[in-house]
Structure formats: C-alpha cells, structure tokens
Image (cartoon, rainbow, N blue to C red; front, side):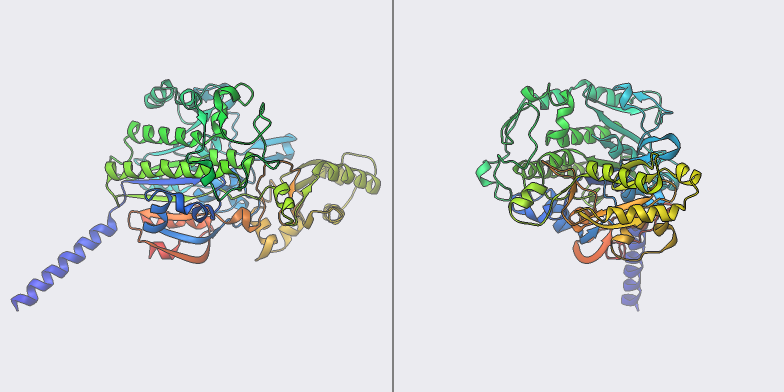
Length: 541
C-alpha cells in the first residue's frame, strides 16, 4: 500500500510538472525572415555551414521541407505581411511592394504613410507605418494577450521588412542609406530610444564599408556556383567585371554611398549588430511576459537580385549569414538558456534563375518586353474602342483599365477586360490571362488561378492579370527577380526551433500562412484576425 501511495505521489508530481511546463511560455520569440531565400539553399550549401547556424535549425528543430507561398505575387511586402498575419494579400491588403491606386492616379507604397514623419535619418525615408496592412499580426496578438506588456521590436535594412512584421502595436527600426543610421517614424513615437541613438553613434556601416568584400574561403572551393566573372550578373557601377574582390571604399560614391552596405553580406552583419542592441536596450525576454524580436535580413535579396542564385556572391553571402546566426544563437543560449526561447525562420519569397544564364545552357526561357506589349495594347484599344487613354497603368503583371472612360462610352467592363485579356495572349511569354471579373465571379481551388485569387484584392487589384511562361521574367537582362507562382519563387524554408519544439521534419505540403497560427497555438494566444492558415500539427501536437 505504501508503494502504491508513493507511486501515486510520483505520478501526481510528474503530471503537475507537465502541466506547469505546458502553461509556461518562452521568454522570447525570434521571427527570422531571410529575404529571397530558396529552400534549396539549406541543402545546397549545407556542407559548408557551421553546426550552430542553419544546421542547428535543420537538425535540432522541426523543418517543413515542402513549405510554399500560396498566392501571386511573391514580393517582399506581401511576403512579410503574409508570414505575420497568417493570410494572403486578398485579405491583408498588401498586394505588392507598391501598387497603382485609381483614386489618386498614382502608386501606393506598401508601408507608405504620408501622415507620419521620420525620426532620425532623412525625411524622405520616414513616411513609414503598417497602416496599409488591414489585419492583425502575430506580434499584435501577442501584445493584446498580455494587455500590451509584451515588447515587440522589428528590425531590418528595408523599412517594409521592419514595419510590417512589427505589426500595428510594435516598434520598428530600419536603415537609412543616406545617413548610415537606423531610424523610425512618428507612428512609433516622438524620438529614437537612447539605445538606437547610441548604436548609430558607433558608425558600424562606415567600418564595414572601409574594407574589401573578399570570399570567406578560397574562391576555388566555391563549387556550388558558376564562374565568378560572367555576362549574366549585374556589375556594380564603375566595375566592368562581376568578380571578387570588391573594394567597397572605391565603389561607395557611385553605388549609393552608405547605402552600398545593403548590397553586401555586411548588411546582414549590421542587422545582427542591431539585433543584439535591441535585445539589450529593450531588455527583451527579461520580464514576466514573452517578448518578440522580428528580424529580416534584407541583404540576401539585394545580392540575389544583382548576382543571381548561381553566383559565388550569393554562396558567400549565405556562408557568412550562417556564421552570424551561429554566434547569435549561442548568444541566445547564454542569455536566456537553451530551450527557453522560440525561433522560426522562413523567407518572404524565393527567386528565379537568371534568364540569360538559363538560355546559355539551353533551358527554355526568355524576357518579356512589357513596354512593347503596352504600346501594342494601347494601339489595339484605340482601334477597337476609339481614341482615348484606355490603359491607365501596367504594373505587377496587372493591367488597370480606364473604367471612367469605359463607363462614359457605355461599354461593358467585363467585356473590355476579356478583350484585353485575349489580346495579351498573342504575345510570346504570356501563358495565361485572367480578368477581375473572373476573380470576383469564380472560386478557383487549385493551380495558378487559385494563387492569383489569393493575391487578388477586390478593391486594389487590376482589371487583367497576367501569368508568364515558366522561367520568363519581365524586361530581364542581367541579374534576376521574383514574383511568380512557380515553385522556384514559392518554395521557401519553414523551420521552428527551441521552446517546446521537438526535432523532426515533414515533406507534407504547407504554406507560409500556417506560421502565424502555429505560433499562436504554441503561445496559447489568439490567431490573427484575418488568418486563413492552419497550425502545423507536426509542431503543435
């Protein structure tokens, strides 16, 4: 009987401990977005990674191998918004990095806000806030769950990479390439915190740009990339070649001054420098409530656009970022304890291969001449409907028609949309076309039409939507870009590591809109109010 009672007490104690652990929350959540990171980079450069960087997340965390973006277009603004809101542009409203707005006959920047001004930095870089994002984020929900006791800080080189993840209630800081300082706007307060001002006085950008960008290792060992000097990459202004080393002091004047750091791996180092300063300056993770640090590494995107995914520059950039993450995670271990913080890592989109490189190795691809197509379209509409400016804007592979003129002429909008869509099918490089009327009257459940619909906002999107052939890009010569719904643009890392995350992996299809609901389940807080994604059960169960 005594043995039974002892066993019962031990069981009760174990259960109590288990309940206590389940109700406990992490000291800190770190959300990491690596701008333009393909999933394949986890494996392509794996042998050169340290044990404590990307490998730590892959082997000690949980990895969704088949994670994708579930909408078109795959750009930075929509990507960050979708990760943190758990929904797509159709709902959160960030349909591009910028988009045409009929009522103002001009473009709206995704994080633009004319009602606020800059704090620090230059005035032209300060009209920034998350107001164009129409739903809450996981960072908002964390703050609401603690009656705003939780602290949220978003940091990035790009303003949109900081402001959108920080949500409507957090604080955001981004880089001003003209002054070399991190700044904010009056949306967040009246002055920079003392820790940001102290950080800016250290002049890290000037220090990084005072040296050469050389390969981290012997360049002959960079086996995962093509020849260093080639005709496919875009050289810096003032350089005829695209080969190491790069004298950054010499390149500064013609390549954006202190903004040049964005196009080097040292922009990622600078972001990590600010991350350390934010953790210490705000005492993140040191209070009674869970805090959140949202980090976006922007330089991977700048380097990727200029040099492409097959370049030695992109290989070097990821090897350097890996070393930075190794040191950063070791710091978190020391400050908070291993297993006491939660990390997720993903990307805001992936990237297409360089068109001319693909052509050189006989892979079908080409560049779509958008200017020529627009001129031909203007001629077609004038011939068919009479004189007038029938086309207001073409951007983001969308065509905006002059609806006022269409109405004045007594024409049927849906019919004009279909005429224009059919005309665009005449051009090489156009694979499919859809109209706004299609998007509003049909529910597409699969394929590219479904991806378009998930990115289509009834109030903001264009009249005709274009899908290019696989591997085609708009007006592409050197370098590359992204934005399509093909796998090379949608397949990104989704990794969770740390607090209450068991090691493992899954090849099940999931989407980046599942990240925010997963964090919600782990933290036992409300899912963002517009979320359409579902928790990743392999992680939360």
